[in-house]
Image 1 (cartoon, rainbow, N blue to C red):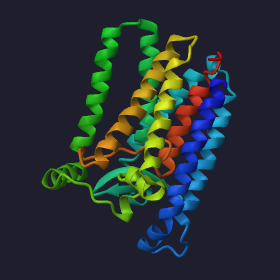
Image 2 (spheres, one colour; image 1 turned 90 degrees about the vertical axis):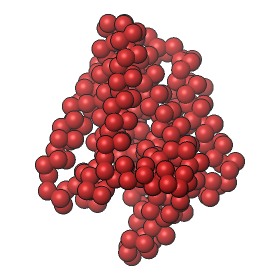
Image 3 (cartoon, rainbow, N blue to C red; image 1 turned 90 degrees about the horizontal axis):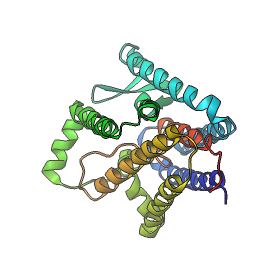
Length: 281
């Protein structure tokens, strides 16, 4: 099976799981937030997934030599501008969590520029070091990047409060509000059992294996794949720790996380990866 087909199979499998979880928890969430339509959250997730598939399909048809750097640069610039814009738009245009501006709101859909900024930064690092090939500098950059993420997570007031709560309890409480976000892996267990969770993690491992073993014709491709694999793996690992009460925070899980940002940022990464499909494995 060609590289492109393997990635498509894994993506559609995980997207289907995301839709199933949203379907299961949508009635309870709709009732909690006062929506008349019991499946409003499920329908929103379906729309995001459909747009995501279109993005992947469209990007996969582009020649990476012509478009890879353009898409990476555009992602970096627009996400950075949106991060700045989020600080000045009126309250009606942003969603806040305990006073922290986190999402831009567009007609009922909330988008987090941060998730796209990560992709743009991975492209930037890949581009710079595909030219320099200085592995010591690359290692330092990775540490700085990870350190920046940690500082960002630990300096937000609502996240600090969550860390304090976690230190006092050293446990995780699953509620309808976080069933599609922080405790998503626990939601998978509730929906399809522990075996389903093991299979889900196995699918992610299979994705990493497919990405890493492929032969790439350009240095920037190799660095980008390493960066994307690290980002997805890091987020998955922290979510697993959070599910067992071993981490106070759980970042949005790619592929199966609820919301426009999680799905569209995933689709952008996968689309750029499929854009690179120039050799068979």
